[in-house]
Image 1 (cartoon, rainbow, N blue to C red):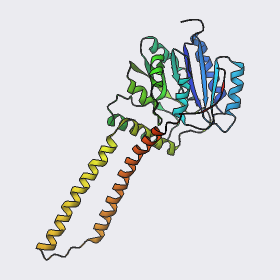
Image 2: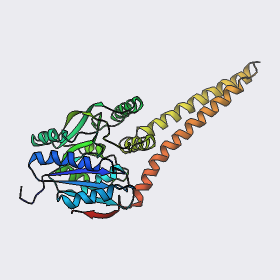
Image 3: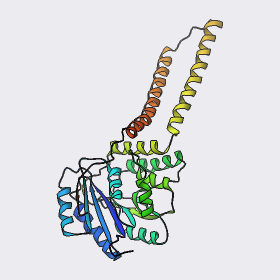
Image 4: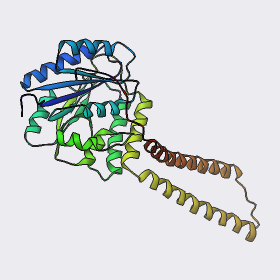
Length: 312
């Protein structure tokens, strides 16, 4: 490694993190200084509306190892990670959120595994502090559902907190996908992977940037990016409904023509019709999700627009 070459790039997405950005900087700097190797910390401002950008600029001016990318508007967490990776220079790239739920000290264990020859080292959560029972349960269900619906070996209970080798980062750049699920794309690439177990802490300050609405979209992006099984499921449900409807029609005609029994139960028939119509709309919605993704990809717009750069 030459004297000017950077060993580690730390990617930190920011969205309205004025309450945590200074503490995140202190913790990250302490860990990276401990390595005694060259590094850069790239803060990616994803359209923050508070004082996040102003505070990060001040950090950049006093520390040459700190850099700032600022978007023209909010483009999303996964796109912010992508922008950081695209502008990184390190031989190893580490992604970590600013809220300090993922302890920066765990990065030292990741670096150790990387030096042992692993190309991807992901953080595996043993416990999640400060999160509701609902979020823990749905997250656990999501990871296991996604794993069962894809042919890719995706580690469960692992988020975006991970280290990737430069060759993995360069390979990721070649994927122009818009609705990005970065951890899934990294698993899809392959390479030699391992995990580091840790306990996820509570947020240092502020509120979560992933409310229920964003979590649902995130799960939808993950499923539609890596699995066609929802489409197949829609086909199977449609076939079952068609067979059931045909058999029920034959039954009604038989009673009408060959028995004196008067067909009754219109309430049941109406309820059944409403159920089937509901299922049809769900299936159309699933198909619409995939068509919408195709439309997004076809437009060919850039993933993000950078408003300013500091420290590069």
